[in-house]
Image (cartoon, rainbow, N blue to C red; front, side, top):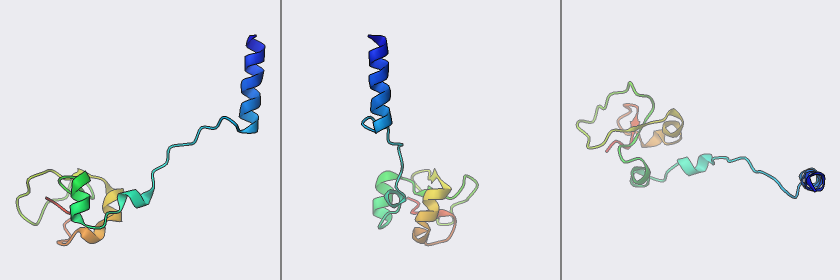
Length: 87
């Protein structure tokens, strides 16, 4: 019985009936239309790294640090301080 199950499983894998798709993230999901949309997901905005300082004054929330997301939404950093859509 074990041999039959093993043979069946192997056959299914070989023919591709059972497949495991790798989990991928779409870069388009991390590009937002505007700061309102970005702030729904990242309440304090997105910082390029943890060492940046906010030039715009006091903010309510601490920004999420992610260089990848920042680069995709860099156009939303109006004061060019390394934090996009700080809130």
